[in-house]
Image (cartoon, rainbow, N blue to C red; front, side):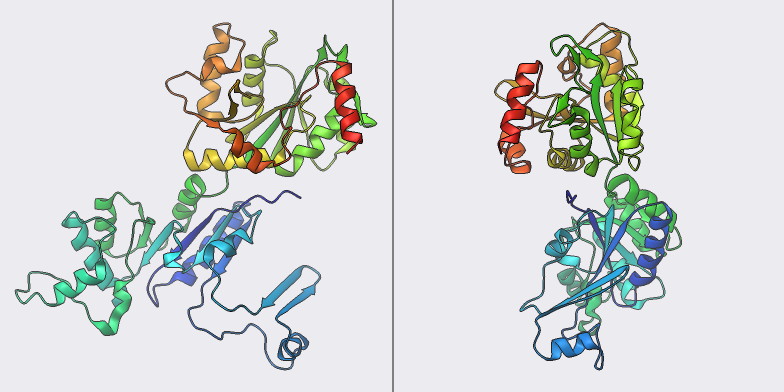
Length: 427
């Protein structure tokens, strides 16, 4: 199984801000949209326990076990003794394969954070007043709000509308440079968010908040497209059905890439010859799509892939890449998500590898279509489009994702395929 890192956001606020209620509603909304949601709760007090005396698992730990797993059909729990508090980043890394993880607390984790401020909570009102004061003064979100509050408390002129007391130190838990949104019913907080250019949502607008997370933080869906085309002149037959290790080569590509595909497409002009894939992989719902253009060429083939895909990210791999890497697809998708690039393409001193690359559908499809209409055949011909951002994925990053390398090895002739097969079977 290929583990896909889970994106995470933190819901933060002061005591009694309503974090748990918001998270409960948000998880339900995201789940209702078909997303897989994980959650992490930060408990600030040492010594909490989810087990209790009398249970067998409690007796195991009381006897000295430092880690206990409780397993039942459909559920598993792990209780582990640790010397120090585990970093939030480590917890997130330990929870792969979720579309998003919603974290309660962990304000200092560095995660993108959503600040909740509720008018019914006195500490939130104080925080909102400090927040808007800083925003009106043009202070950055890196401001030390604790010091700002203390200065206001000492302002004998009464010019500041805010107060600060050591007893209510929750007011020092303020938005920061990690704050990406505010959820509030306090006018001061909404004004401050607007001044800082941060979106603000009403407490009841859970659907709007879910839309925001879906657009910016939920793991983007990836369509994986295997380009099988049709008969290859140099191979003398279809590359998709040529035998490799006793099975059609296309089966190997499907098995290697399916674990990271939210949608699996094969572009082919011989759908009848590949009909066996539906029986071979009934759980995958593989789509067989013919070429959109009668002309052969890598760029028209890419347009077919982008047109057929339903997801925002499209990974395109040639069917003769015997060692195509699902891990490389994951790494490219993460790089695209972090960088905002339109194309993430492996690159070395010889140039790009456009047939094991990732493309953003909504921006690349129009550019590829325009160049195809002009008669271009090479994929790289649209890389210089001023509206397209290309992120070269350096060789060291490829090897970091796939240490064994070999991702771009392809077979064009029976002799080349035989050599690759001999090497593969000899491993």
